[in-house]
Amino acid sequence: MLNIFYGDMKEAVYNTAGYFKYDYEDEWIVDPFVKKMILDVDKSTVMDSGVIDSPVSGKIPPVGLSGGVKTLILVKFEKDKVFNASTCGDNCAKWLLEIAKEEDRTINLRHLMNFGKKPFKIRILNTDQIVHSMEELVPIAGEFV
Image (cartoon, rainbow, N blue to C red; front, side, top):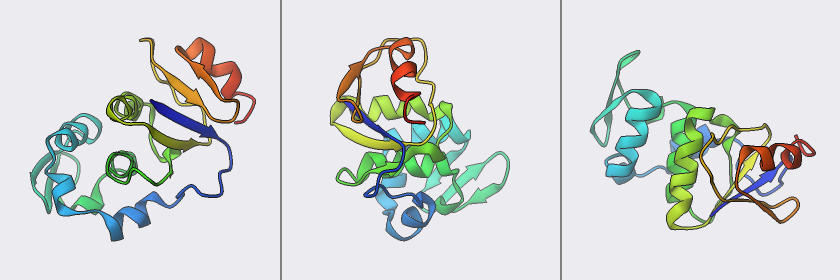
């Protein structure tokens, strides 16, 4: 399940780009799930662990990926850390839910992310409530962001 803490969270990693730059591993980039995320969010194709073909920037290293994709990759592989997912746009929301289907993940948000119209299951840690739709999520999250 996806767990979200809204607002300031002392233990959260806020500089996800810096964390990614020094801690990502090559095998993360060539993971089939990660390749799908990169293609969907950044519209870029992974050539190998060190080269990604971006329609905007040409051939780039993994550190050249968008902040959203870098954060998604960290959420997927750094299971014991909490990352600031406000670096992600709404186009990352479905991937956060997908990552959390297999194993619980906790993220920190400082804005209201749109998780779409389909039903979902998210625990809001601020209130320990489980919500299943944006209609349920918005009034609770709105108290904290």
